[in-house]
Image (cartoon, rainbow, N blue to C red; front, top):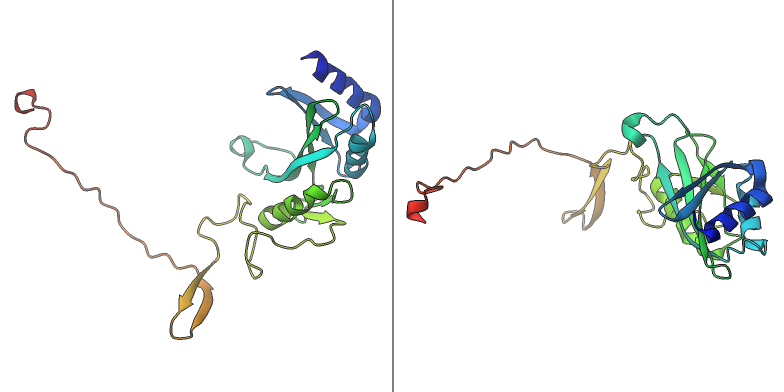
Length: 201
């Protein structure tokens, strides 16, 4: 571990102690995991503490761990992972927090800490169904308003649940259940008489 990352690691442990449930170094970057109850407080301190000074939240994404490790995963299913940057100290940090309830995943919003997270939280809500408590405009951002389900969840059907098409008779776009007609794919084999015969080129 570099001297810079060692300093960051010590600063994190000094500030948060037992609130950090995991601290790992991978790919030259530290990752910490915190509990959902401590998440908002830890994120605020990461921004405000002078010896941490993470002024920017670069990214936040949702993760569904239900099939992680070929289904060997034993922990909570849904997590939010944030990537933070400190310009003052020139270091980065990854923060992971798991939602306590797999049936209705909810995590505190950090829009009050970093404005830049607004659309990222909306994306994680739209694609994974993670509710960000305290977000003042939590609505879908990539799928249609009438969309059913959350398409990045591992149990979401690959074909979706409904399909959308333009109906010329009705003169509008309509939704209908997905219909997939079974088809048989028979490979077409092409053989040449001279294949593999060096005498004929």
